[in-house]
Amino acid sequence: MDIDENLPLRRDDPLGNLVKQDIDALSVAELESRITALKSEISRCEGKIAFANKHRSVADALFKK
Image (cartoon, rainbow, N blue to C red; front, side, top):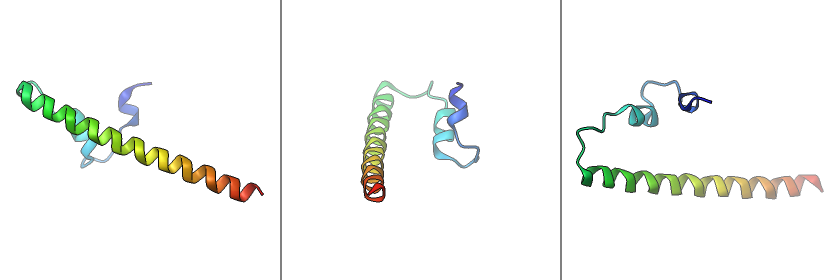
C-alpha cells in the first residue's frame, strides 16, 4: 500500500499540504518543534480513536440485547 493512498484528495487538506512541505531549510530546533507538535496531534488522534472504539462497543452491547 502506498502512503499516498491514505491522503485525502482535497487540495486544501492540511495533512496533504504538511507532507508535501520541504523541510530541508528547517533548523534542528524547528524540526524538533515540528516533531513535538506532530506527536501531540498523534496522541489526540489516538484518544479520539479510543473514544470511538469504546463508544462503538457500548452501542454494540446495547443493541445486541
